[in-house]
Length: 309
Ligand code: CIZ
Ligand code: SF4
Image 1 (cartoon, helix red, strand yellow):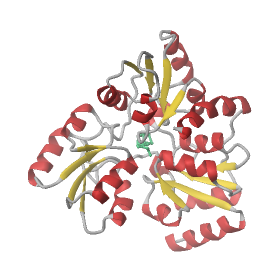
Image 2: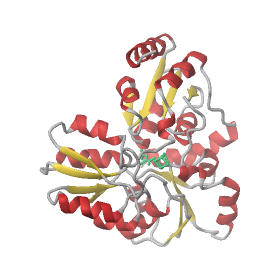
Image 3: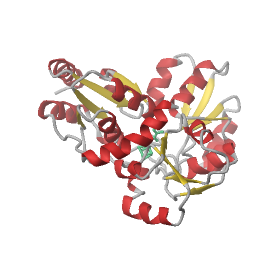
Image 4: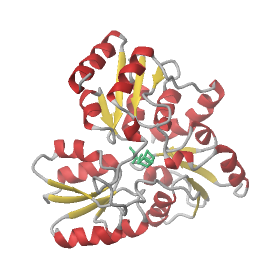
């Protein structure tokens, strides 16, 4: 089937089944085009929490679909590919994290939303890159904090908030792939360009950036900036939505260390989702995300705390 036939079939099936398709900004354009909602992880969790649809098809990575299920346990949450993981989530196994926490009693545990449901059950607060500073500022000054799983975002937060935080040593393979040397050379060729970066990027990239922000933060920044040229250090998929928002501005993807085909950074996990897989998952209503009730109840608490902030 070609792209537009598949898109039409998915759209029709969504209507018959009262399903909603939620897609992350890092999905390929043909998926974003037919999604009912496209957003970053915070926006998608809010949407998942408020939807009236009976089925949520989640085109993102597994921890995001789990978050949708935690916030909406009575709904059926299905995913195009169960193997669409995340290096941050997979790099923080619950048994190891539980052991790690034993070294830090009396610490408040703040976890970045990019972690599994089990890790969320071990957390006091969940945050996303859009609200991490806000979440941390609600925790009393004298309180020590463990932050997991992203050490780059953690170091950025220590710098921004001045708080004492113990970090779990996790990272995002995509955001750690940017080359500082190539970025500097690219900026020398485009001295009028503004460098924007996601805080999952390494410290040397963040020091070079003119603006650091979450996925939606970057879009808003570029929309409201009087400048016309930007170098974007985050996953390549974001450029599709950004370009729609600012059709007259020039957006250049930041170069990665590896010389791959697009010379930019793509999340291989996000790109495991295809229109074909969305179609069959909607048709079969499978693979479905299942979580034990106890996990759902415990994981809801730190997420609800975040959503209330
Ligand atoms: O998975 C990611 O890298 C990000 C930045 C997700 C999100 O939407 O915040
Ligand atoms: Fe995980 Fe990085 Fe992919 Fe985001 S871009 S889903 S943090 S591996």
